[in-house]
Length: 225
Image (tube, rainbow, N blue to C red; front, top):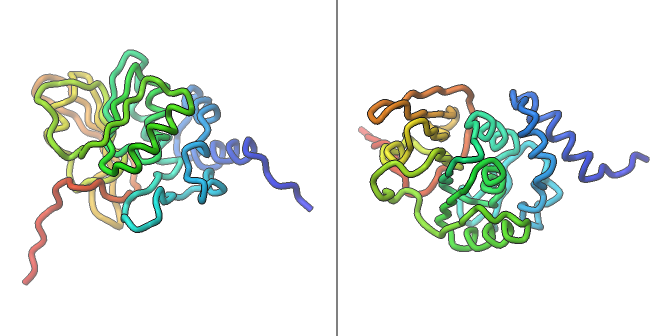
């Protein structure tokens, strides 16, 4: 009879079999994924699935889209953003708080906005219990325009949108980067936008994925005849 895999073995397999094959090769990020325990952020009912290549529901399933993104999507997003220790980060869609914890380990400070008050409170408590002190979780609607002016080095949308919110681009400092999953099912693309000057932004779309919608962001008009 094969012994039950330990958490550390499951974590190792997640990193080696899911995350490395998605071109996440930065050893600092791989080490981070080994030390920040994903299972601490997963709801108790789904903890045995913490290391699987899948999205996990965060509530009882009654609210569509309230999920934890798959490990490889969170890891690749973090990898491609190249967050630096002096930088400030805005996350839209706290969810479980796991991505906020990863961002907090790379950045100076993180503000994470969560529209669901239950998830916001739960994530804030989980982060506190895990000793994450540079992440502020705020119950707020991330689709509401922020005060004008560049405020963040990095902005992460932890969910999908139909198009890049223009107001968020204006909240990037020069040299800042925004990550979002953009498009319609069945295929979406990860967009990474860099503000290269006061009036210019460059975009790359390096990989495909699908993610649930962030609430309240504009959807394209649909005409029927």
